[in-house]
Image (cartoon, rainbow, N blue to C red; front, side):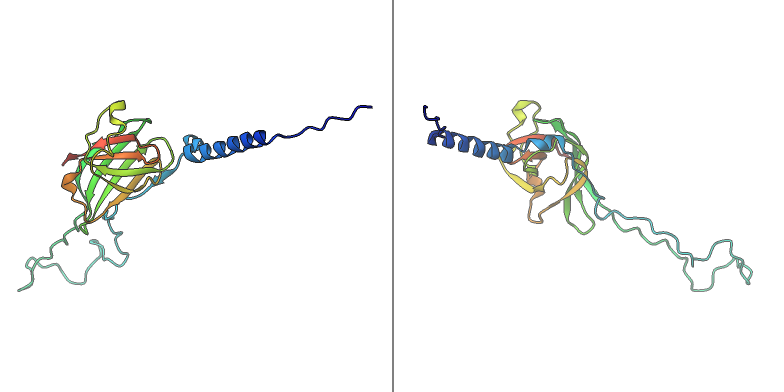
Amino acid sequence: MGRARRSRVRPWMVAVLTVVVVGAGFGLYWFQPWKLWQDTTVQEALPGTVVNPTPSAETPSAETPSDEAPSDEAPSGASSPSAPEAPAGPTTLASGELISHEHTTSGSVKLVRLPDGGHVVRLENLDTSNGPDLRVWLTDAPVKEGRAGWGVFDDGKYVSLGKLKGNKGSQNYTVPADVDLARYSSISIWCDRFNVSFGAAELARA
């Protein structure tokens, strides 16, 4: 009787399989394609917004009867009460509308000065695609439509305001105190991994 042939896994086959598995794992990590079907919505209020206080239950009503008859003359030396001044709220210094670059993007952006003197970039009604390593950039680059505008934002000066909190919603991004705002004129939703803009807006001064 003939001997049964034993199958042997050759070393080069093991090497090829290893390369394929490692390459597939790296590709999934790098591209993260599942994020295209995942949405993250973040809704934040604008810092420093004044909320009207609720009237206190102890505040006397204008209809509350008084034991004393009203006088036509104010007491001597008394001054008429003046309404308290409302605290200053946030001030919009510049704003713009997002246009689409590599991914369909919409919403508006604002550069806002807060009552404490700080500044934030605010994204309102943002709607874009999710993706790996998305950032909010304050830049000095012009905003161009089409493919010509996808990669211009890292050509000049830019400040990263942090990772995009969510691909949908309204969010605030703090501008560092030492940033000279006069040197920057646009906002980009920037994919730092692939060096491409998902969408951007030109800041028009108020």
